[in-house]
Length: 463
Image (cartoon, rainbow, N blue to C red):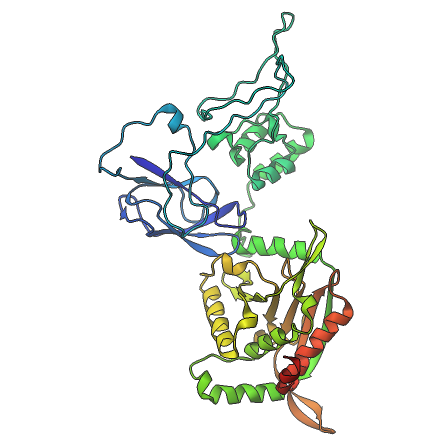
């Protein structure tokens, strides 16, 4: 029998993904949970395991194609438990949509015949002798279009227009497209599974001419072909990580009132400590960098300033205080900026923290960071010093109260013991959300981080 695998929701309500590459071809025999494709979400590249054991009969999408969640991407020929082709399913059973895995990597689909039947949508303006109509039961026949009810009146030959009582089924990108084009989705017939309205349905409705003038103008602009690319410019589609990062940064910049403070510190003692640690036996084979010490300083300073390890919950009008630290580290990757985080970083020793940082950056640069590691951060660090930059005004990672940028370590003439000496100096830049972090809190935290780098022995006074 032929089974389709539809693109699953890869977490956090992502509505689409791009097919990066196929690991299989038509005619290949695959086993259960074998990796069949790589897809790029708005956050990371994820491997898709096969939900079936069988033979690939069709690949519905080509690499480079952006596919909406729920659309079929590959078909399999599989056998039943007895190794035979099963008889045709009954119409009512065939009409039931199959459940696909919600998250990648959690095994194959569990077949179940005990799933309750889906109720039909209730239609408005339906005459009935009672105040509340009885609910309809039974599965929805996906191949039979819904027929709008008509009022039985001898004097009328045309039924009045009726609309579904609930919002038409569609995905967020389709709803945005419809809004931009001025399309009322209640007037659009969905051609997707279970009546789902797709982008093609919206475009086809636009082509029918039932649009206001402004929407027709927008549709005409969208339909215009892109200008020919000359040798003097290159155009790259905005999608994947770049698209998600842009939306997140715009949202953060225009939602949270940013404040940025700067502190220049003599970090010579910290750099001397770093050199000694590299030579010590416990740190043999571990990658120690200035980022390691800055990260540890941030974790220690948060104990005295926990208000920076929080978020503003607009929906519930609450300030959420985290009693754990998921430390985000901004990482530049070939696909754009990502901010994976180290879970429960406050529990790690300096050795463990150095290992976690190395694994995090290597995984991010390889594009293999999981969606789980890209979500749930509570505070972040960005290392602009690796590019030779001294200071900046970093934008908050959405959902976090603060982000610290560490600049380059430079040998600079500096006052030391009442004399001018050549010292190793670093500038720290702290941006914080002024809705929940006061200037005093932000300044105290930044001063504590600086004090720990200027004199690592201060850690004994802060723990």
